[in-house]
Length: 301
Image (cartoon, rainbow, N blue to C red; front, side, top):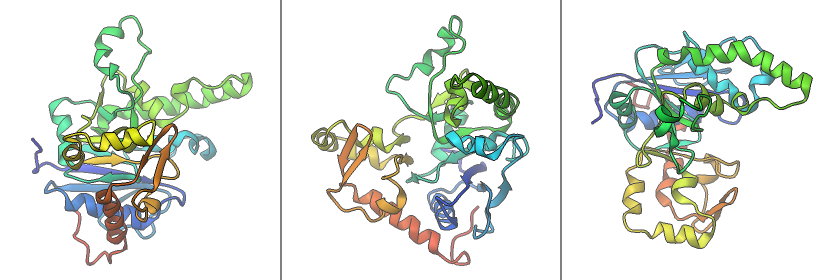
């Protein structure tokens, strides 16, 4: 059960111009509206202009490498693991800014009470992270590749995740440049590195709590996605979900707030036709929350 009396630290990361202050402010206000738990909001950003005063601002820490290297593979997100950026000792949740938070985030934080570790979104149907205690004996480098759009962890448990990346990446990159051989995959993106480095303590959120839209709503054909929508109990399962992340350049909040019923939604080989008014309504409400005068918004707890 969620523990509403314990502080939860909510981390958002914003850089560049893809998302502006209204989206950060709207997401923080929606998260607050869904829970009675005390919340501490932190935004790691290169531009704090326009953000709500209740949000603690942290500049990107110096990771001792050129900025252009950190812009590839969302490596800037690893800033949240640098010692001193976040308050230690708090259950910490991270959300990508294209994630819809539909319920009480205390339910996600409660995963850390049951089994302390680093939680990611499921990225594969076969969750072989559960077998890690067995196969690490004969394959210590093997890891489950999770999705980093939603995370749960205690900051102090993973300072080494950032420190080891900062120490090792420049030489790995230099060797790749010299040899022309691509870097090993776990050095290429934030979620690959997180999955690799935290492989012994990696956990996955239960699908009923947090999932990717493409996994929970889409299928290889339109008729299969339509059949999936009609499965008994699927609607109730979807309505109980706390977090749902959207990926793909065509499935961003600004489009989903204006999408029409029947419009095609495509992500790689997966597709569906939009028939989810509750999700469209969510993105419209987020836009409205982000546009509110800060004085009229309920303050973050």
